Amino acid sequence: MKKSLYIAFLFLFFLYGCAQEKKERTMNILTTTQRIDYLKKNIKRFDYEPLYYMEVETNYNYQVLVNDFPVNANFDYKLKGSMTFNINNSILQSGKQKLEIRIYPESINEVTQKEFLGSKGYFKLQITQTAWRKDGGGQEEPKIILEYELPKENKQTGNTIDYAKLKSFTDSLSFEGKVPYILQGWTNGEVFKKEDFLQLKAQVAAFYQDMINAYQKKEWDYIRTQYLQSDKEVYQAEYFPNNIIEEYQKGLENNKIDRKFFPLENYKLGIYGNGRILCLETISGKNKGNSAFGYTYENEEERGIMYLDLYLYRPKGSSRFQIIR
Image 1 (cartoon, helix red, strand yellow):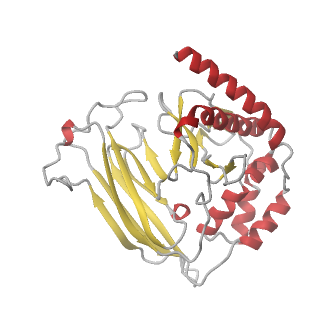
Image 2 (cartoon, rainbow, N blue to C red):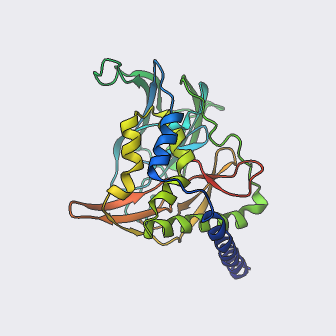
Image 3 (tube, rainbow, N blue to C red):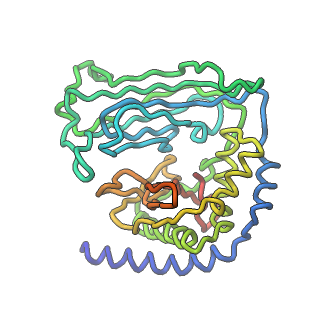
């Protein structure tokens, strides 16, 4: 049975890949100048432009979602301690923002995790709000919006939580976010059905492979055009000025590095955005928990590993995936 499913998956991957090649290459590919002009016209500036940052300090593996969108995750046994990152592009509009925290046992090495969370683990999270000062003096003093630590007692029962006996822990809460913009994001996307997941996995894999091929062929305008809707929303959420828009849009062709993409293997279909967002996530090996769209890079100055966001949705009434983040 498993072998039959695997063969069916490969067949779907092949068919979709052929169809995708025909469709994608007929899209209206914009030049760097056209994209920059479009983005400059569509990015609004406001009198007050709040920025929201999340800081996580933990020795556990974890994933954090805002409005059911993954804003950060870490399964790397070497990266412990504190991490801070911006979460604006997961805040689509002002109001109550949903926060979900998923805690997993820490990694021992590149391929092995502990079985249980353990009694000596810790997890702290803080969300702050700031903004760029209009006088050019950097950012305002951040205001704490939310502080969180692993609870000692169960919310429903009041019983003490014994983390030494837990293989994972999930908590849900919310915070108030006020932003001057409204992003459509994935709200108008199709809600995918569970019975279609095998076919969807093949389709998403074919989309990823098409993007890998484009990188290898250095088709920078094609890649950036595919990301254009996502770029517009991310730039808006972080209030990019014109010079930064230009820098980012010219970044691929100006960045002279040698990329070697990881093969598409050992991944699962990630489903987010209340069933509207799809992606591929690595499930084993040293890249566990990261995007399956990743590569090693090297130039004269440095070498390292990069994982790229590639979150897809399908607008209602459309037959094609679009990149939303």
